[in-house]
Length: 492
Image (cartoon, rainbow, N blue to C red):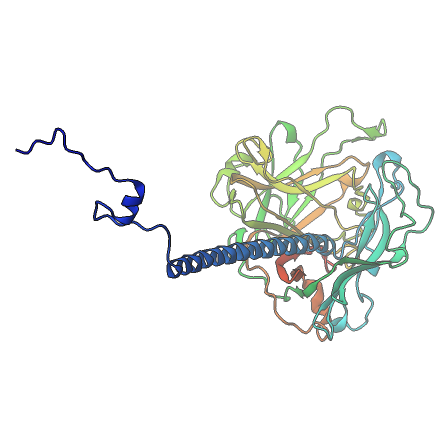
């Protein structure tokens, strides 16, 4: 073996390494021009793609913001229009002042204000317009909606008849109102009613107000008359017209009214149930409302079947006499209440705000308003008897729609009466064609219909389809909404 103890070993410096001295390894100092150009091209492509993605993201965000803004504006405007449409045809009120039986018995009831109708005095019945609206499609393709209704003060007293118009002008949605009639006499600013009209009220001088610009579509379609969908009749059973009312006979309702049918048979069902002999909460000796011992009359609606059962709870518990209501569904109570047959019928002495009539539901176990977790799901609906003779006054129709937030079970249909003025308990109330129905979502059929040739049909319109498009910076917000107008027409 060779002795290497004293042999010199050459050392390689960095220059030798870079130039391959003493080794086969060969390294370079930098990139070639071609490589550099490739790198720059790749880097530019990456920057371009990233920039385009950022630009697209920014544009999408701006578009989304514009779309949201347009949708919010459209929804806000639609809510304003809904408020007006929902009051179309409101025509009855409580007159300012006191009733004929004295101040302690409340305000006077006013008859129907017929100027709310578009044309109620037309002698030709087939062309009489007892509705409170007009929809006209203009040459520019936009609709114009005109409606009439009463204006009330803080205490529901009559103030004026007003006409409201919605239309598009130069791409902007406008609203204009005017008074057709204002209450005669001095209107005072007195609590709690504030029965006055401000001097700057826009209806005073028919001020045109611009609601929003950028409107690209405004369409109002009345629900086609006579097409109301396939309502599901819950009470009485489908195809049945007869029903029966039975008095609620517990501690708070011991005084039962007299109930007869159209044949004047006592406690028998039929198409009509007439109630008389209401409990009187007025003390004729002291000439004031009783301090103690006040009672209400309450009756439960059941099927017209012969039975020996007298307990309202037992009758209510029978199948077909109690109901279940699901959230998200719409229901309606409807009935006709006959006008008094004679001038001396004491029901004409009914005083709104003092005497009380209502229809609603009672839990078949507790007898109270239906509740879920202590929260009432359906309140009572108050109504009043017609004040005129047959063929006059407010007309016979009554309808109340409702929905529930939580599922309600075991609810019985009930009427409640409480008489406090001196004579109303001596009157009679006749209920006819009582119905409880479930209203399907396709309740109204909105399609083209020639109302000008069938003006008499307009009184049957109880809903409108509103279509509204609003643009913001090139983006559109769209709203389709169905609005109920239960007071339109002579029978509300």
